[in-house]
Amino acid sequence: MNDTHAHLDTLSPEVLQETLRDTQGFALLLSVASRIDDLQTTLTLAETYPWIYAAIGLHPVEAERLAGLERLAALSSHPRVRALGESGLDLYWHPETEALQWKALEAQALLAAQANLPLVLHIRSAPGSDQAERAMARWIREAPPLRLVLHAFSGHYELLEAGLERDAYFSFAGPLTYKRNESLRQAARLVPLERILIETDSPFLPPEPFRGQVNRPSWVRQTLDRLAELRQLSPEEAEAAVDANARRCFRLTEGPSAS
Ligand SMILES: [Zn+2]
Image 1: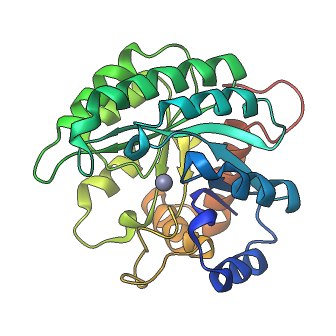
Image 2 (image 1 turned 180 degrees about the vertical axis):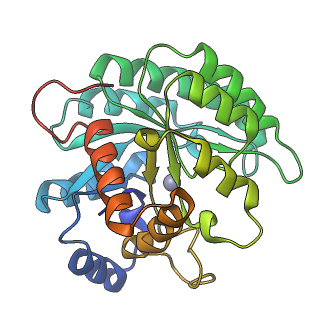
């Protein structure tokens, strides 16, 4: 089992302890740093627990802190860092920093390419709009050669097309279990199995039947089970597939591997 996106640096000590206990058998738990000023919490977890790895980045909601990019460059060769990001476009919380968000994205894409790390993309529009999805679909089509991860993939059609064109990884989260998300489930049927990842985005996006609670990495099971059903696989087969994908995407195995 694995969870390719969790913000362990935001969890309460109790939930973190429970998470460390419940995820010990995981192939990977990718802890995504939430704040550029506090990368150390994430790095310490990744240095301490063998199944925890770090993603470091400048989140779009912090795009005004561009000076932090130097720190990312210095840390991108750290052996426990396995991804850059999350980066991308957030027009929900901070439409006013859009220009800075693009700058931060370009810089992190360059760093990811130089460090041979995947780039984790966050994409969120203002309510009732899909401007961010459409703009990022255009960006993805023209992005430099990179392993791209569409984090908490929404099922947006243009993003799906652009991601498929670029052989991106599509990471499915709790919304795959929500009743009204038929278009997302349709996307989960369409994406090639070897390009599917699963995540919780803990503490956000709790799956059914835990909606309204603080999400935790062990609940990735709910999303995995839903995925298995959609792909007509046994839970064991689905788990083996997403574990292999996570190992390949985040380079957990030795030797040459496909991108
Ligand atoms: Zn996140």
